[in-house]
Image 1 (cartoon, rainbow, N blue to C red):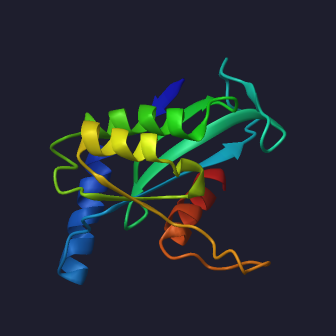
Image 2 (cartoon, rainbow, N blue to C red; image 1 turned 90 degrees about the vertical axis):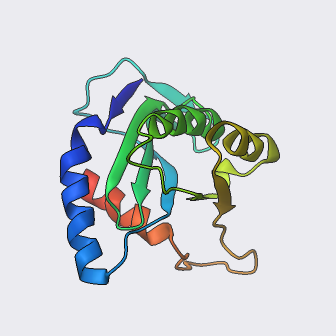
Length: 159
């Protein structure tokens, strides 16, 4: 398990301050998702097999704010489930307490759905979970609200 993000605090606070001046507000919410990734150049012993996606490799758990600025990135084996990895990364975000004191809502993708996980987040972190899901009647690409912010950040990380 590798944790990244603790050294980004100064850059993130400077960018948030500039955005607050520009938009006259400070973002209050956090966006959160997970993706399976095969990164050949990364050296880590945490390699596993995700049976759901049929992929061998690693899984990235990325937490970003509403501007798309990275709060925490947690890299685990692909065999780690979404909810278990989500708990690990949210514990790391919770340890950033002065920086995330205004956080109250977390948007997650459908992999993090489930009452035990939602209750854990409400009990341990005191945050509200909102699941962003694709409409069931849609068969092709649909632009999901809030999800594009994380997808854009993931694009920046893999570029």
